Image 1 (cartoon, rainbow, N blue to C red):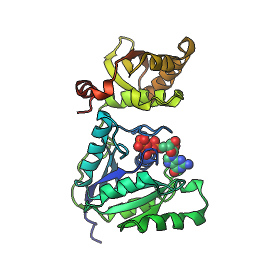
Image 2 (cartoon, protein in one colour):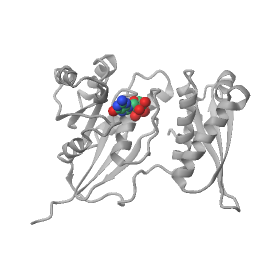
Image 3 (cartoon, rainbow, N blue to C red):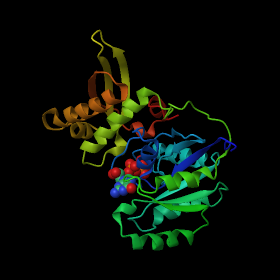
Image 4 (cartoon, rainbow, N blue to C red):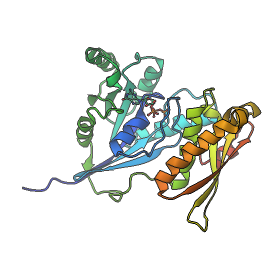
Length: 297
Ligand SMILES: Nc1nc2c(ncn2[C@@H]2O[C@H](COP(=O)(O)OP(=O)(O)OP(=O)(O)O)[C@@H](O)[C@H]2O)c(=O)[nH]1
């Protein structure tokens, strides 16, 4: 039998914040390469994740949730998301099955209106709802626009991910493997480390500060006893936020450090000494120079 032709292509993953885009990509890739949290707008940068199969290679672009921008960082995020849509073979529009089609989804549907790339509707979190409710949800969306395909899934429980992959394969083009088989992401380690720390901060702080923080890795050096020394700074916008992140008696910062260190050690496969600081950088979100400093260029 003739061997099927190798296919490859780029897939953009879009959706309102918190619908499970990062969870989906991590589940597909089988490794934690994109940070997740239950707070919206966790993902800031466009991230490439690579799924290498025997007969195909799919490159996922995880985009920051599309939403109406309120400040410069918001504008940057929306711009990044929209730009990728024209460059890819197929767009995955991920929606949350537990939520009504609302203003957020309509806003994205409007953004998609002028774009010719095929769009597959992915209805996520079906583990949380009664099966009977899935069809009416899909109905609501297909009334709004034509989708190239519709796939209900649970990213968390890996339900129907194989179905999603075979749907995606239809849109790939005959082409080479762009990336080596063992490569799962194009993110440099430094950035992943910063993102892991940011994830822990988001997880332990209950207050609404997700947008107010950025993490900078100032130093990574190997110490004589094979331990990796990493100095990282968590930047916040106000003194009060600094207090929140540090916590009473430094407890929260200690927890953040311990959890992040464990993840970083798993990622790098070596012992890590994490030297974690919190500093105030006033209004960093609205100052372009500072944004560039944090890698959002
Ligand atoms: N029960 C259930 N929870 C899910 C599923 N997928 C994601 N979640 C949860 O939903 C929350 C948000 O998931 P993320 O993957 O961070 O969402 P996101 O769309 O990447 O969010 P942003 O980065 O803010 O754009 C997390 O608490 C996930 O654990 C699912 O299939 N079932």
